[in-house]
Length: 72
Picture 1 (cartoon, one colour):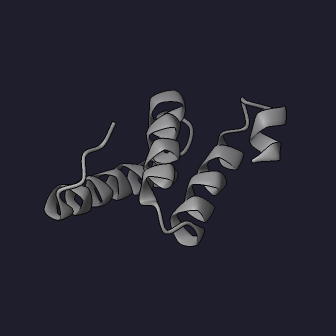
Picture 2: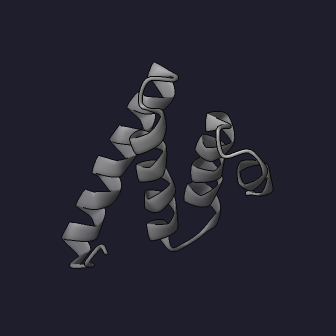
């Protein structure tokens, strides 16, 4: 998190932050927020990371819908 805060142009740090949040935190809304931020800002940087982030956004959104959880 600190690496991204110190250099907001570091797209890899933001992607890593999303991955770690997805693995570590039980609340997946945190990871979803970071994945969305990555897709919005750095869609053209790395195709594999972009594809992974969009897939996780779809999966997490579906999980929230199935569980009846509203996303802000």
